[in-house]
Image 1 (cartoon, one colour):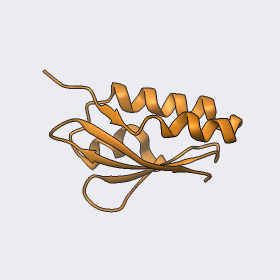
Image 2 (spheres, rainbow, N blue to C red):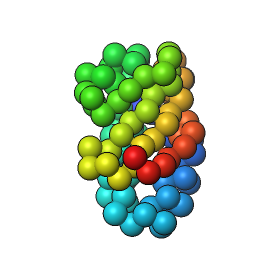
Image 3 (cartoon, helix red, strand yellow):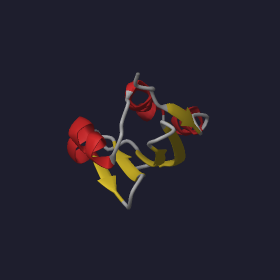
Image 4 (tube, helix red, strand yellow):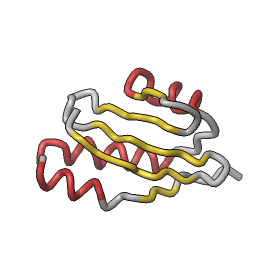
Length: 91
């Protein structure tokens, strides 16, 4: 049985989109993609998100919105299926 990702730091998203309303739909979409994922490695993210994801070491991932509205920095614990949103910023 595959576990779906649990997201810590989700509160950072509405805080950001209240200041940058044009990012709301993209952030909601990114959160939905992350929550529905069952990633086991950085390679799984690369296959799923392609060039939208960049890697800074095992389990450290930056996701950039294709429209250029935001950048998410994540730390991922694959065995526990846990994603921590470390920051969200303008791209």
